[in-house]
Image 1 (cartoon, one colour):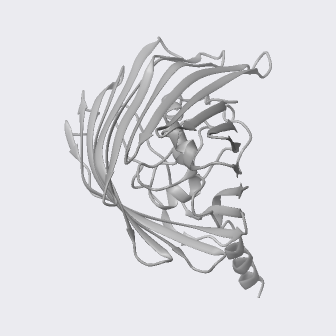
Image 2: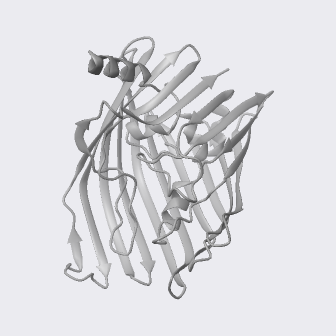
Length: 380
């Protein structure tokens, strides 16, 4: 009886509004910073012009306080994020706290033995609609804390811009500053980095192309060295309305990633496919799930690591995710259905450029820890 009650209460808390939070996108196999073809309020972190499509909303993402001492945001270790979008006339304004970008987490995770993640990022958004939807965003992080023996400083400054013209959207991001130092021999000095993309929708299918370049000078208890990462993607995503309660999502893309560092160079190609389903189980409960699979992948390293061939062809892998939303009128509670994860997120190093489309997990539903990425959203 106790176990049945635990499961029943857990299911009652499984939730996400139909259009919000990291948990929903990750359950459907998308990156949590936004999607080109799935309508979600997280899309404003990909293209700020999307704030015009998500007015008058408050979001609270539950998680650990701060990033600097607790590592990067991940499914099993989410970070607290909160914010609001408010419309005034044909303008929309947004204010968010704690949302560090996945790209920032990747480069700062290259430092071993310390956590130099962004500690206190603040995001300001503004958007408008005058026939053409536009939006802009500034991210600022400035932190100096700790004691004389465990001091940490982090700084970041990023700007984003984007427009939506009918079925076409264009976005761009430039990182002006991204530094961190723990005064124990570990330091990150960010280079100018950027991310840009274009998407166009035709008859329910969205075609997209984007390019990302991230760079930093890293001191990791050793002489300073350069670390540079690039990623190019070309793909398409489709939404199929199955009935008045269910949508089918499908995405296929080809990607190329490179890393150049003092440990060597790596070049990787991936061809992942993802299929997701979202349905209104009842008027108050929405369920979703997805399966991702790497149809093909290949990685080349130079120089080759000890014991590995110069060219390493990876075996295709498969990952299944699930999530749910509980709706109380305009209030929704969202989350991923928890499994015993081995790892999550993407791994980028001198010998590994793992694509996050397929993550490792064990096939166990945990009733003692049923939900991850829990969030609350209210629309007014």
